[in-house]
Amino acid sequence: NTSENLSVKTAGKLLVVERRHTITDNDTVFLNLTGVSARKYRFEFMADQLYTPGLTAFLQDNYLHTSTPLNIDGTTSIDFTIVNIAGSYAANRFLVVFSQQGTLPVTFTSVKAYQKGKDIQVEWKVNNELDIKQYEVEKSTSGSLFTNLSVTAPTGNGGHSASYQLTDIHPAEGYNYYRIKSVDDNDKIAYSTIVKVMISNSEPEITVYPNPVKNGIINLHFNNQPAGKYLVRLLNKSGQVILQQQIDHNGSTATEPIPLNKYIPHGIYQLEIN
Image (cartoon, rainbow, N blue to C red; front, side, top):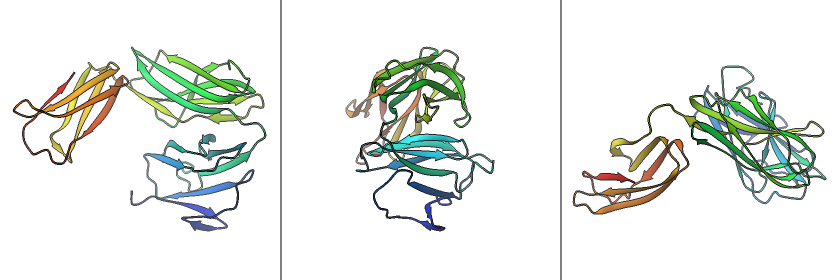
């Protein structure tokens, strides 16, 4: 993207790189995001060797009033949407806040959602579950405005790992977005990352595009196909297998890109999917 600009604002200056001393409690990185348009975006936070016992980091969203945990020794992807409302595209909408705590907060280690029959299954796993009052599964059809779908009580609260699941029996046609909200005994809130599932009421099918192939990539679009392993083979006019690849499809609707070897000559080929 050419119009968007992301920098760190410190003491009134906009910086591309900032050097800091050892991170301490309440250290804050003020992000300055400008030149955005009304569309969907994604942050990718890549942290390396920041971990120290009790140190946590959160992305604070001043528009949605949310706080999303960040992996301080890995990569965290966070989707967000810009709409035509002043607070949504404010340059100071986002900031990263560090916290040093004696007791580590609950950590979402896995969140996923997938189509199961006509329903959507939402599953999440946590570490260090302690002093949690409840989990709330929130749902959205826009990716930005969420409502409460269900409340789940913690199973352990002994500082250990735990797994949970919920079935949404009333998914909407199109994209369904989910996130998990944890509420502790002091009413402190944390959010998981957002996951999404596409629901289509059309008949199951697999389509291939573009045809002819462009830029050396075949796209397979799975529409309402059951989950499973699909074997894809590309054959030339003599019946020789030019390419073979297995795709692990998790169900519902998805697009799987298949890159082609640049040395495959132009011509007519047959694609088989089993």
